[in-house]
Length: 126
Image (cartoon, rainbow, N blue to C red; front, top):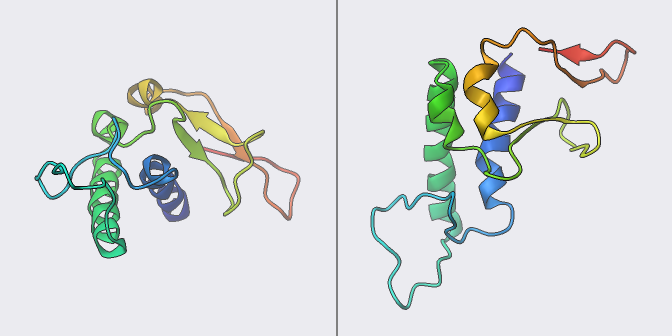
């Protein structure tokens, strides 16, 4: 379960940051200050690390409290959350959950297959 939580957390956190660290419709300004006219919208690696750490804490807290509404705030608006049992991403087979699906996910009794163990033929499920 810990590995699944970490993979989910990283997927949630990194989805908005994959293209760049420029603010977008799904990013949050952590410093509380709006970018100025000379601000390029980029942040230093140290500031990026602080942003990611703060978002990771919020995601882990939402998971711990089973707060899917809060978790929705960290899901990419178009790409959703991708569940991958490995460090590599398989866009053809990984399970993807959209933000609007998260609140009902805890009550969903469906067994989702989200990968196959490398050493066995039995699929992994929730």
